[in-house]
Length: 86
Image 1 (cartoon, one colour):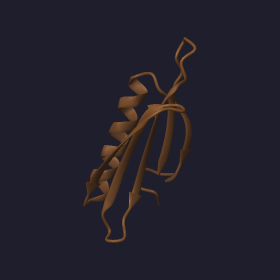
Image 2 (tube, rainbow, N blue to C red):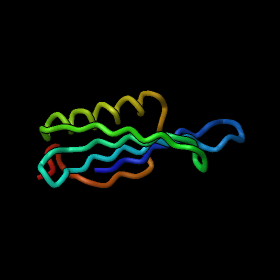
Image 3 (cartoon, one colour):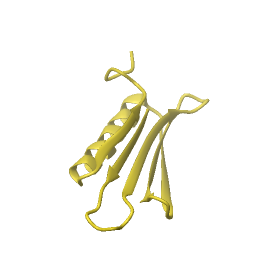
Image 4 (cartoon, rainbow, N blue to C red):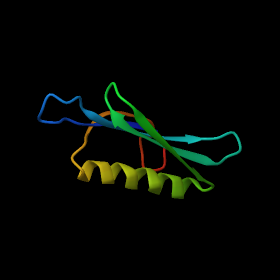
């Protein structure tokens, strides 16, 4: 699953973005990537590991909800259709 969110500033500053990606690794675990930064500038990448799918999806949804509450708007979504991808 992948989400790309942007916060459009009111001034001439470039927009800030957040990209949240959830991937399954080769051993059956899950990795949540959170990339934040300013468009065209430096970015910060954080990685978190999960053994259980439900815990990984819960963390993904929490990260998404946090950014939406901060005023970011969803620009692109790719991935699972239903709540469990089935």
